[in-house]
Length: 255
Image (cartoon, rainbow, N blue to C red; front, side, top):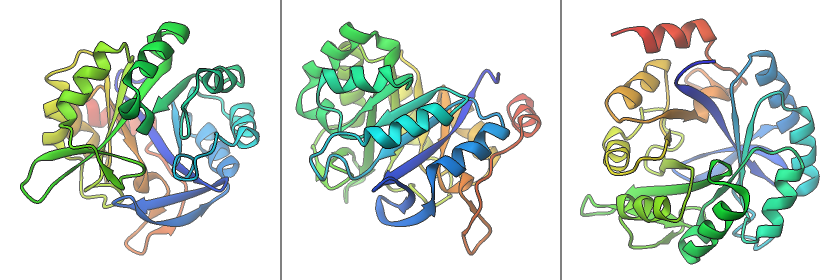
């Protein structure tokens, strides 16, 4: 296994796979199970699934879909979307999902993160932080699928979540989401320089070299990729793909 984890971050909507650009205009990709089978063959280390409509629809996770995902995956899975209850976390973990990611409710009720970490262990709890720059260039945390500004600085929020006992932070740049223009290294570096828990960088990966950049210059512990691992070419034809282990080894071992 690579010392630096690299993983697909896949978005769910109505049980299907979609991909957004800057958190907007979700385009249909296909069936998540077919994607999982391809990633199994490619020996991906981990998978992240985020249900982007669960919170907006004020509903619980789609347990039938999660059951299928858990039974098909050969690798650890993180799931996020619609998590507002400790019992829901227990049900998800009982399906065989290794980690849960909490986003909007971590802002609404930080003590919930603390309770979840105490009940299920810090290594099981991820807080997903979505941030973008405002018109003044200041980074702000957004919730509800990027629709609602919290007014919080992502560094301050990440530090607070670390105090609540979170085991990992999934940090996504809304501005870079789906653009394949490279990670927002400055955003990542600001957070990683202030917290001690692992930070997974997400949003903007377009080529394997982007992984090296965000790890070496941004201090990320791991990298997540979306468009890069579901599209191919300028016309963004749907093609489930992933860099080979050899390619990743070369990227991370090169100076």
